[in-house]
Amino acid sequence: MDDELIDKMLGVGRQPPKKQIFLEDLKVSEDVFDRSTLLTLYDLVNRGYISVLHGAVKTGKESSVFLSMDGSGERHAVKIHRIVTSDFRQMSRYIEGDRRFKDIKRSKRSMIFTWVEKEFMNLRTAFDAGVSVPRPVVRRGNVLVMEFIGEGDVAAPMLRDVKLRTEGFYREVVEEVKRLYESGLVHGDLSEYNILVHRGKPVLIDISQGVPVSHPMAEELLRRDVGNVARFFGKKFDKVWATIVG
Image (tube, rainbow, N blue to C red; front, side):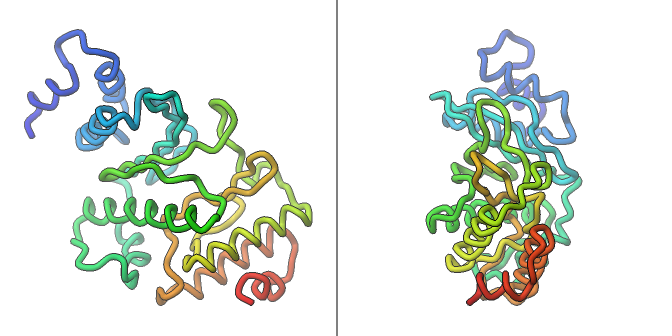
């Protein structure tokens, strides 16, 4: 698709309706909003998943998360993976061996799209099993739309910032990890950075690295997750492990 056609779709050179103003404003952030991502967002706008995109609530090297609203006013989180800076070689470690994904092309774009699909599928599996995770809404290319965890426009804080180490909260975190394991998944990157505290309850996020329990790396990743939980709450590894695995 040439630049002239893309500009026409984005309303360049004329007074566009609100949706197109929204997309045109995003062009200033080319590190996240490349032309391919803009077209993906344009599609999500036209399908009613996004009406307004607010500022970033979380920014990392490989992705950014934005607060958005759909046509009905419901708040969502929009996670956009950067095509240029994402480490697709690191991603491949968690995709290879996952029976849900076969014959994946080795290009960076294909790997990132699969990575987003993987997080969407992990969220759906976990959410359907009753695990406290954001409800997945839709994914397109390098963009994932999911439930926004927070109050109003303010995102829920990470556990590392709240430093909630009560026995009751510890038990709730372990119960969520156990429920996730029983659903057939291992988080793979669990720590106080990937647990939100929302209304006094834990919410597990950033589950893109999650793998099925049948994955060759599953036990190694679960041990790392358990070790991080034990360290943060000052518990013995064996006790936490036994509670989750049985």
